[in-house]
Length: 146
Image (cartoon, rainbow, N blue to C red; front, side, top):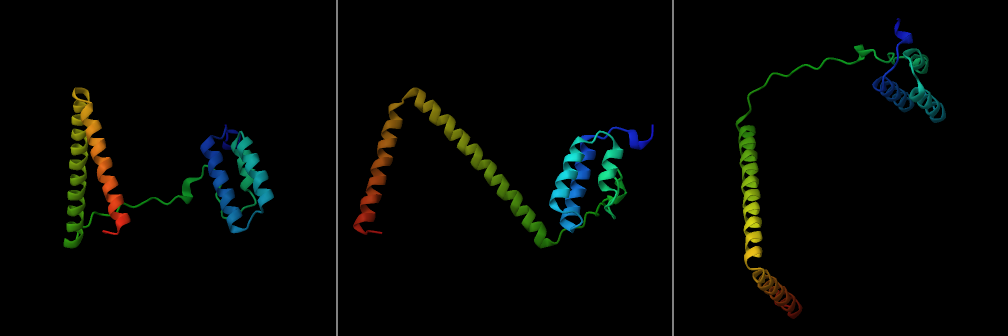
């Protein structure tokens, strides 16, 4: 079976639609024609139906043709300068601080749940204390103390 009669996949249709979008951006297609071709691409069953949609668009390879994709080269790992190494180390240290903070919050939450299970009235006293402090701050702000 030759390629023209092979069934196209969804990724093949996506490649054609992306190339049609590029053609619109380049000014090769106008918007109504682009919409017609997108609709046809979405309904295409075989490669030949997709090829027709790109036939008059020069410089665009047919669907499924991967020669346009350049292979990526792996850059060799270069040694870091002293400043970059210090930045990386400080970033690692900062992430450790956040991990410690997360563990501390988790421990505090567990302790709060235990306290709530043992003596729920403690939370009432804490809430009243917080409200009193907030009211004092509001009164101080209204009085112009800060």
